[in-house]
Amino acid sequence: MAYQIGFFAYLRLKLFVALLRGFMALHGFLPTPAKSPSSSPTPAPILVNWHGSCWVFSLHGTDELYCRRIAAEASMYVLDADYRKGPETPYPGPLHDVEDALRWVASWSPTSPSRPSIPDVNIDTTRVALSGFSAGGQLALVASSACRKKTTLANLGLGIAAVVAVYPETDLSLAPEVKTARTARPIRPHPAWFLDLFHDSFVPDGALRETALVSPSKADVGDFPRVVAMMTAEGDIYSPEALELAGRLEDEDGEGKRKVVVVNSEGVYHGFDKGPEEGSKEWERREECYGAVVECLREALGTV
Image (cartoon, rainbow, N blue to C red):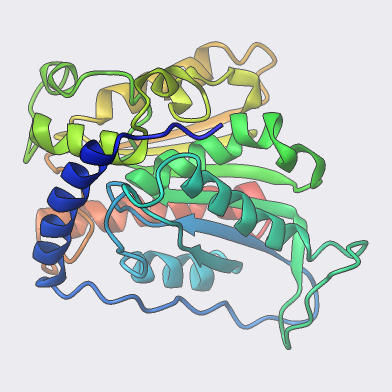
C-alpha cells in the first residue's frame, strides 16, 4: 500500500522541488536517447540503465555518453530507461516503472506471446545487465536484488547476470549528518537539508527506508546477481555505505560464485563524470570508470 503524504507536506516538497528544477533547467540538460549497437540477427545481450535524478529531477539523457560507449565497446543493446519522480510520484511509483522496463525486456523471450518486432533488434533475455547512476544506481541495485526475487519480476525468467551502480546511495535509513561524518574527505557534499528533501520526496514514510525494496544495503546477499560492480567516488558521502555493501557481498559469498568489482575513484565527487573538461582529473577518472564497466560487462555477458 502506498504511503499517503499530508497535503501541506506535499505542497512544501512541491515548492522546493519546483524551484530546484528551475535552477537545473538553466544548465540545459537535454534528453538524447542512446542508440542500440548495429547487430546481426543473432541475439545480443542488453543493458538497462537508469539515470541519476535525486529522485526528483528529469535528467533522462544525461548518461548518453556512457550508454553509447557501452553499446559500441561492449557490443550490446542499451535501454536508457526513464522513471517517474517525486514528490508527484513517490515510492513505489519509480520502482513500478523499473519493473515495467524489465517486463518489456522480458517480452523479447522467444516464448513470449507479445514479442516485439523491431528491425535489426534481437535481444537475448538470458543475458541482461542493469546499471544506474546515483538515484538510478539505487534503483538498479534494488531491481537486481529484492525486487527481482520478491515481486512479480521473479516469474519473468530474465537472466540478470550483472548490476553496475555508479556512486549510488544504498542506505536511505542513515541520516545525512551520519553520511557526511563517515566520509574521510568529503568533496562537494550534498547539504543535509538537500538530502532530506530528496528522501522525503521519494520515500515519505521513514519506516520504508529500512526495507530492501528501498535501501539495497538491507537486501539479502544471495539475492544479488553473480556480478556486481560498485563504482564510487572518494569524496562522495554515499561512498562508505556503497563500499560496505560491496564488502559484504564479497565476505558473505560462501560459495565463491560472485564477482565483485570495486572502483573508488580518487579525489572526485558525486557526479564527477558529467561534463568534465578533457584532460582534467574528473575526465581521467571518468575514462577509468567507464572502461572498467565495459570490461566487467563484456566478461559478465560473454561479449569478450
